Image (tube, chains in turn purple, orange):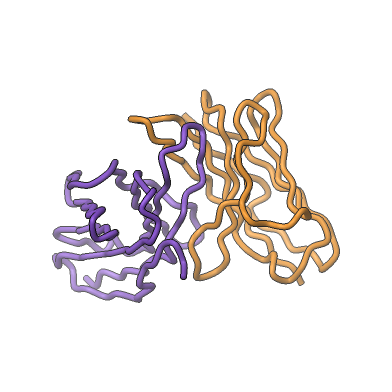
Amino acid sequence: QKEVEQDPGPLSVPEGAIVSLNCTYSNSAFQYFMWYRQYSRKGPELLMYTYSSGNKEDGRFTAQVDKSSKYISLFIRDSQPSDSATYLCAMTTVQTGANNLFFGTGTRLTVIP
Amino acid sequence: DAGVTQSPTHLIKTRGQQVTLRCSPISGHKSVSWYQQVLGQGPQFIFQYYEKEERGRGNFPDRFSARQFPNYSSELNVNALLLGDSALYLCASSLVRDGANVLTFGAGSRLTVL
């Protein structure tokens, strides 16, 4: 079993739709949770990061963490064609100086104009 | 400010050859990490260096090695290349933010092994 599971999609939605992206994980020691966006032939770009459980909002993006269920989500409101990309969840334990992020497979999203 | 820069952007090698990939971190970032991303998969951790010392190593064979220089730039070396080493190799530099090591990735070096 992988430590981080993510539905690879692909996911296609019309412009303006609300998008929900999800990951589950098995390691209860994970404390930091991140979402990266990756455009084709580019490196991942950090969108959101959260510590422990709770919600965090940034513009059209909302990240949710439910540690009791080992489940994290990213919501995109009013989706735009420019949001078309692969979205990667990532997580890590609390270890000073350690950068060992565990990534999901990534969900490929297409927003149709 | 320049982001994380990697070179070369693309390269083609044959089985058994050796490759060296280079990375320059964001100015002021002292930690560099390397990740391998196979097509259709998420990045997988290879190495982390901080202040020129190895701080972490993923589940990769000894054919993979890295080092960090006094200016915090880094090199990743892969010997005896296999077809399965074909991937996008990502370098990331980081600062601690709210207790978390937040990674900023470069665009990657795409390696094809024939």
